[in-house]
Image (tube, rainbow, N blue to C red):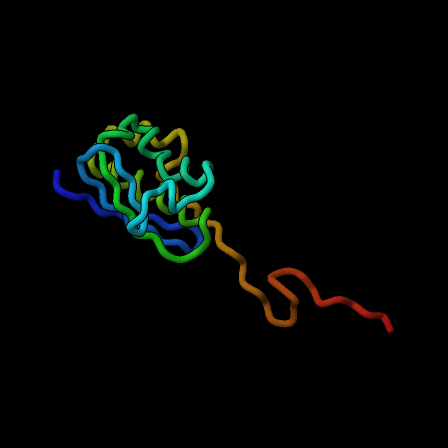
Length: 128
C-alpha cells in the first residue's frame, strides 16, 4: 500500500486525508491532532473512523483542512479518514455504516434573503 488520498466536507470545511501504513500518528495541518483540536469531543471526531474499524495504531494519517470552524473541520476530517479506510479495505464499510461515518452531512447555513434581517428573521415592526 502506498498512500491513499481522499477528501471530506462539512459545512464550509474541506479536509484532504492521506492514509499510509504506520504506527497511528494523526497530523492535521502539520500539527498533532490533540494540539490542533483542543477539546476531547473534537479529538474523538478526528479518530472516530479509525476506532470504528479497530485500526487506531495501524495507519498514519496526514490531513490538510481549511475553511469553516473547528467542529466542521473535525467532522470533515472524520469523513475523509473514513473514506480512505474504505478505499484501503472495503470490509471496513460494514463497520462504518452503523455510525453514519460515510455519509456527507449536507446541512449548510441558509442564505440571507433581501428585505429581511437574516435568512428568515424579519426587521422589527413599528406601528408608529
